[in-house]
Amino acid sequence: MTAKAKPKPGSGARSAARMAAVQALYQMDIAGTDLNAVIREFETVRFSGDEQDEVLAQADTQFFADILRGVVRRQRDLDPLTDEQLAQGWRLVRVDSILRAILRAGVFELIDRRDVPARVVINEYIEVAHAFFSGEEPKVVNGILDRLARKLRPAEFEHKEPDTAGG
Image 1 (cartoon, rainbow, N blue to C red):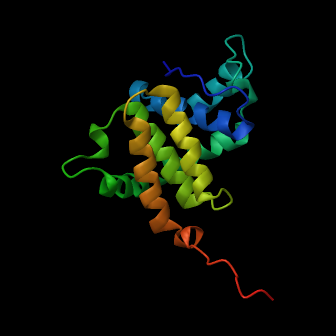
Image 2: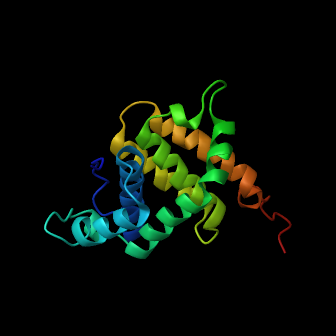
């Protein structure tokens, strides 16, 4: 049981890995699939097996597994950070399962994947949200990840004044 969505054609290996990670997190949430079992399933079936998804076949499988393992390992840190950004009275457990998976993966990357610029993380997960939703959800992803990125990585958002001294 996985959620299906189609990312934009021409997406790179990491974009495909993010899409797959969100689908796998959804599967783990809905069906209670074990982390190692879902990684094995994606590696043997979704990425290269008989039921190969042509978009997901491009996925960086190591990056995919890193996101999944990181989200599971850091979920106790990720969920409270996300809860703080939701509208008053809302908690992450009340959010749509796919949206919850997108937010968890995005927040994980903001916290643990300093090799990926914050703006890239935000844009990538907005695109993932667009693949699944046609309503306000991509804006929710943008707002939450942008606010958290500015808290977690403020240096990446500092504006530098252009040098006008001429010399």
